[in-house]
Length: 212
Image 1 (cartoon, one colour):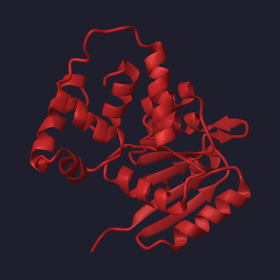
Image 2: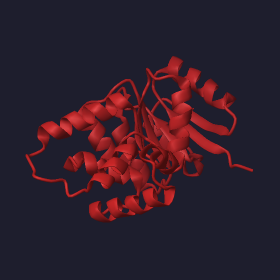
Image 3: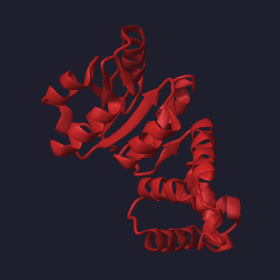
Image 4: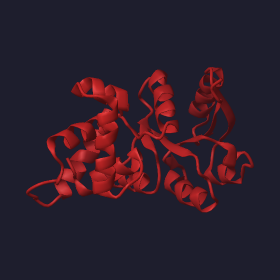
């Protein structure tokens, strides 16, 4: 039997928060343990350390979601954090990913996409919707100095592109017409070259260093 995914929602817009809470509570396999309007309330909640995914708004009035990212980690929180926001600047998005956010989900997307995003981050995969990805790549490109080579071969670049697109290993294998075990081997090569251990870290480092 699959375990229930325990969720916490932090958003200061009451109408959105309560509507999303009802949607999540109705979804099979999800358990919403609490929803809060501020980072202080969420950080003080005794349920926090049992949560698998926190759905965190970026702009919380006087506070910002980045504050929660730092303070929750200092308190020992080991779950995933998915930013659910109307929008973030390129600088803030990179900072959120660098501070441990598993992904960025924009509120204009349909509910079904959010369900998919939650399952992806629980599985340890990053989530960036296409517009967020395009924006971050554009920012990285503008900041990057010209360089002769990223140090990645053609196969590594193709697998990295699949990771950016949020594809699973199986989906990347099907797209590239290679075996899933080969995809896993290439991912290990990418981890070794970039000095990371997870897909989320790989996305962050690739964006920061403009690897493509």
